[in-house]
Length: 261
Image (cartoon, rainbow, N blue to C red; front, side, top):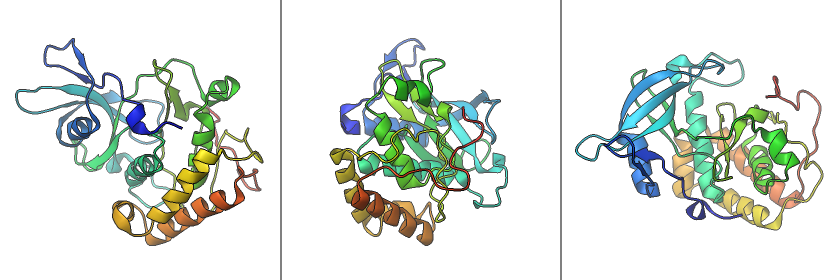
């Protein structure tokens, strides 16, 4: 699977004239969503937690701006099985996606904003009414990676609407606030690959991730977002997937999220 450097994010920013779109390099894009001024434009009404559409604008003469999704901690509903600070798991999912080299999760950072600390993620323009079910049905080549990503991150809520197809045909995976539990919680609509071999290139990436999760630069970044137990569980899941080489089968409990979309 091509790495994120082969999949540029098209036109994420708008120049000061308000009409010209600009494609930013990864460093400039990260600077925009990390240090730009946030202006809340509205709330995504169907989200279970406070999910805000915002405009981020670079200060100074550059004046570049773009759209982001801002999820402040103060807007999170308490959960019995996850501690407060779900926004940190959104950031951890991005870090893992980048470490794998899959570029599935839109650029995401943790930062302060008008409603306090939260995650800020690049807004992805997507094709309407395209879900994971459509992408699997069309055999989009990114879907095995999404399925493997959910296994590794222990995604407890991969609904059909949590995979997006942008106008360039690239698949993005969003909404990772309930990932990385140290207890088995995989709930996903993507069971189509169950029992099938994981592609060799994905397995090589997963093995490499397992070596990086504890210690090193990635381990330090994830250690600021997840507990030690969660990091060890993440490494264990990566090693298990690499060793078995096959996508897992649904187990007891609740293997599907609700609602499905």
